Length: 285
Image (cartoon, rainbow, N blue to C red; front, top):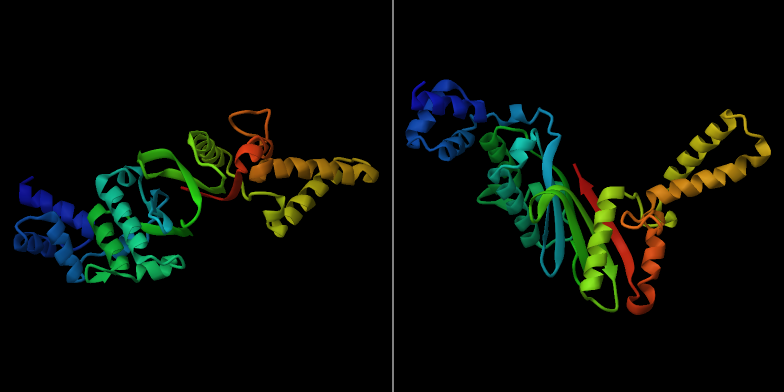
């Protein structure tokens, strides 16, 4: 297969455009693949929409911050191979920097995609990357948090770069003192969040619907097991206590010391540091 035939084949796979259109675009751009894709996009011949129908269950999560904001972006791809590529990782980094530069804590996914980028929109930027990478790409999540007057720590699991991986967990906390011990504690707590995946900080933060649903399930299980009705509520109390210890961060068993809960661990830092977890986030594929 000749070089030009190989290039035409690659361009067709990446854009979905016809043979002659790809051949002409390559000729006009001296066989430069990226410029040829851009030309086809501008002419409306690159069929990114065909790829946009395909499932995208892989991808990566990136975290970005400055003195004002913390930005977490999750972009899905079709394959893990694409998510590890420099093209994809650089794309994710550029999105993170664009979100930071916008400096709007209330920015959501839809508004972000409509922002201007190099004379077009970020949504067009996505379409261009779909054509370039040859896979469907989806902006799955965009989280923006205030980074003023707060302490912040994060952990990345299955990392591709220092700021990008499969899972990112974060905590915001308050402390009278910031030192290496507090930094290590905070990082370990982020690791715990990534491993144990709590749904809320404490019981009071759990959605009432979640609590009610679990109570109904457990009560039905207890009754169907033939237990006397006069002890059902007592058994239910124990079942719900176990449930809370699994889904609420402060009541979970600490992964690095099974003799402690997160709540009892933090109590060791109360006197000297007045350490408190204010919030946490977990973003994963």
